[in-house]
Length: 556
Image (cartoon, rainbow, N blue to C red; front, side, top):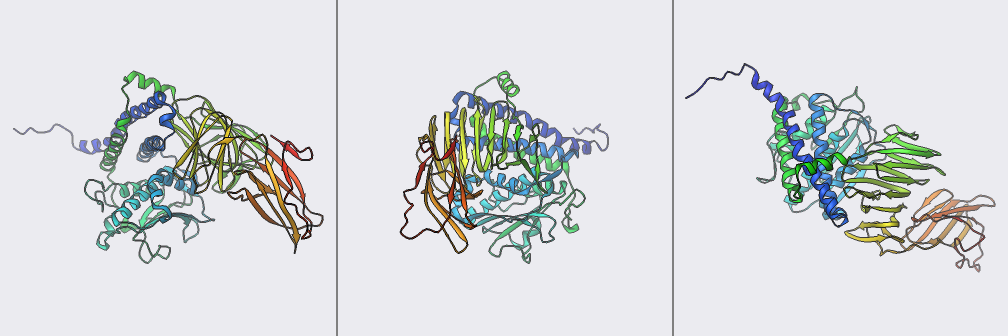
């Protein structure tokens, strides 16, 4: 028997408006429990689990889901924190999340970043979500097509005022008849059961809500890669007053409740299917206790000496002690400068001079820093639920520790680690080495890490040749593998065999300053005369073992 509804007119509309926020609220509960479960596993199993790449992938994906829920809730309620941000660090973070799949492509994957990309205004989280989705789609398309290239580009838009991110792939492509449908909810080119038809629709909506746009590059687009089967373009607002125009033909009615419901279902499926196997047997009370005791933390500039700057969309700006650093913030220290960072409750990072460091990720499971150049010393106190990770500029070399005091030196082509206490795992090129107390190791770009060796008591510097002629002074020499060399203040690339060579403009009565340092903190400087050398002169035996030669000026 049918009964008439007593619900007032329009109540269905109200329910739909509540459904999205309500579902996000409900999703937070199992996600929070999952996060607590991961931390309990970390406490029980320690470094045997938390030093694995798959662990970083798991905790990173949980953190990404949490961030996505936050972003959706903010965009739905109009409370999103929109502001200026740098595009490249966000894109690199999205690529890092897909590193395991991208590495399988080898040289068929490329990231290209122009040198004059302007800053953007909007939501960095919306961009992260969009690029992550586009890269994942490109990988699927290439795998379906049996191979091909993928390229991610960060560039200045043709109008010159805005930043763009373009993701091109050589995969299966999109039929001409379907090009207008790719942003429609439910449309997918993926096999049944693999694609939900939500990703592009959600990414576009999030970007538009933040003033940006997502579109398919037209065949006639002059910036489109001619080899690409598919190329999608993310364009970002230059300022709050200049959102990216949306073509009327591409605009679509917004069905907030329905779309957020579908998004929530997709997120719940990822959380449940991906990480349910890691859940240990624990009571709800124990999980709640872990949640209450472990926070993601923050980074605070505790002390600063000399010139310390933070990278902003408009360039480098001074930063002072007491200021907080957010994810994707980058700082650098000038000559003779130094800083100390408090990373969460248990970690301190001493930043040496001539160093550039980026805060990459701060969650309850991982604290990730990117060392582009220079040296840092880390004191990471016991915390079974949190791993501290230091990665190279390209993310290919990684040092990670649960409890350790160690130093890391990035010198362009290499990442070197010296451990004082505890154990640090250095990973690169699919291999790893554990660096225990009193030992050091180095990983060169594209190669597996060297075996760990005892930390030497001092540095080696061997000046092989200084020559002056035709207005140029050439300084060549050999140092220990992984050491950093600066000649006249200029960072010099050191080869895998420790050799270096640099050409400088010659000056009258010139003496070139050669400064070296290693991961362990040894450092030395020498003034090298740069004068014409007769052919019969041999200076190849000029070797200085700093700390043993009283004529040299060294320190640690």
